[in-house]
Image 1 (tube, rainbow, N blue to C red):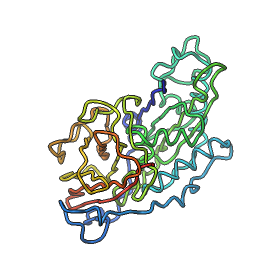
Image 2: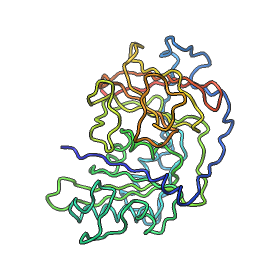
Image 3: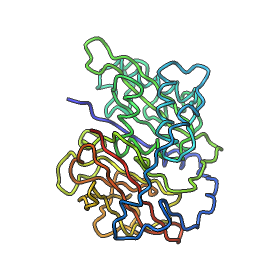
Image 4: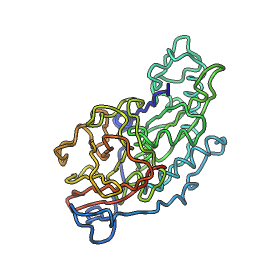
Length: 349
């Protein structure tokens, strides 16, 4: 059985403790922002005017490793920024203290029975070896990192690239990669014990140090980026922990996860459509943070596990078709001005 993916964001805890949630104002934040040709009429055949990219992966190596980053850590940083910068965010940079915390936790999982790390994000002390802190926030603090925001993701993939991609093609594990709140990261992989089916224990810590401003988004970040190809057709949400809301069918898998990260919480969603290769509507589910009610359209459902009110997720209620161009249309307002985004991606053969 494939191990469950586990994600935890402790940004709210860190911010409450440090009182630092400053952000640089977005440029022209109240502008009427559109993507695609000037005329992309609502409700019509928008497939012909969708933004087709291609995505810009040229900044994959724009993140700065640490002096002590090993080969796996450098590979993880490159793969992280491969996706992050293509989604319109500034690159994330490696931090030695976060790498130390990640390696400590990966090693803790690799050398102790799972009873020492219930839920994977939490360490038990007692007779467990290598304990550095109960929570991710405790562990990065023990490594010397003073956080304004922090998050952690864990999986058991065999390579750094597979680890990053395993997190990217989910709901909650994707969020730190697409969230400008985090400016630094540390990846670590510890090999499993002999006989352990988990070849590597992968941990990635995300952070923003106290006193550092979070760069703002000048526009909405969408994922998959426009023009992305080989997009996986399905999302097995019951393997992610916590488990996202089930699609309207009540069963997994759903179609692949589509996400939008807004520059602020001051937005509404008035129209959302997923269209297949013939530009026919695809049944889908869409979710927004439970604490936000304004602007949620009638068929949206609150997502109790998503505390980041700037994110919106949607996915087809069923697996998407292979080798098919899909179009996403989202319309509403952003900072009080009309806004829309129409873009396309293509699934894997």
